[in-house]
Amino acid sequence: MPSTLRELADRCHFTLGAATLSERNFLANSAYQQLHTQHFNLLVPANAMKCHEVCRTPQQYDFSVPDTLIEIATQHQQKMRGHTLCWHHSYAPWMQNLTSLELETVLRDFIITTVERYRGRIYAYDVVNEALKDDGYPRNSIWRSIENFIPKCFQWAHEADPHAQLLYLDYRVHTTGRWQAIAKMVRELKAAGIPIHGVGMQLHHDVFRSLAISGIRLAGAIRDLRKLGVTVHICEVSIGIPKSAQSLPSAVKFNLQAQAYRQIVKAALEAGAESCNLWGYSDLYACHVPPENDPNDTPAVFDEHLQPKSAYQALCDELTRYAQRSGRAAA
Image (cartoon, rainbow, N blue to C red; front, side, top):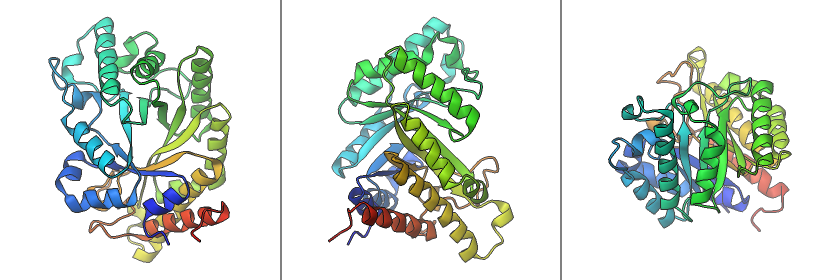
């Protein structure tokens, strides 16, 4: 019988990953790294491939950390997804006073150089991240000064690796305003022949907010996105325990967290999402959930001692149920 999350995900033909939080910790802590390769079939660098990390100086790129991560992923037969090529928070200080044409050259060269470097090795990219407001217009950012920067980013990435899956990533995709804005963008890009292959969803919430987004609602958003002719990916998931619940008995609060994680994975599996990626996997190096960003919100499925929590078992149970329902259970 399967004994790890990865074995269960493989049996379901499902991509289940976790972000490396942080890359420095991931590379320095062998037990933490081994936990990842044992339980996940997808590796996603949380920061190492972002523009401000790779382009620290205008003279040269620094791919040393992504190079190491792709070797680890390859050694352990994991997929790797590049995160993220264009994000409003990701730019180096030296870029701030460039003209729009100079910025376009910088962004184009960064995207093409990155995607060409890992051509055939990184299977997908979060090409553009969090670029839209609910009204459908691009949010204010350094990259907005580049005319038509969103379609250009996808085109540059596609030219560098025609076989890579190219995703647009955002939060609140399950809400009406943001969903409509993204759907409009996807339709326009497709009509113009721009290669966009998927949409990624971010789900960073406390347990109560996460449970309030019903599984039915989340599954409906996934199905509606698929009707646009794109694949759907849960690209970032973290579910924290808010201050208001931290005084509850451990069994109660961690059971609530487990229910929230189960709900997301169940919706992803049943609605046909292609992947689900946890934004961090151990409370030892956690991604704390906004807006509180509380260091005690313990949002991961493994605790600070790298031991499985109730949420881990909930994911195992849901993957097992899906495998049984789809006829993929072990003989």
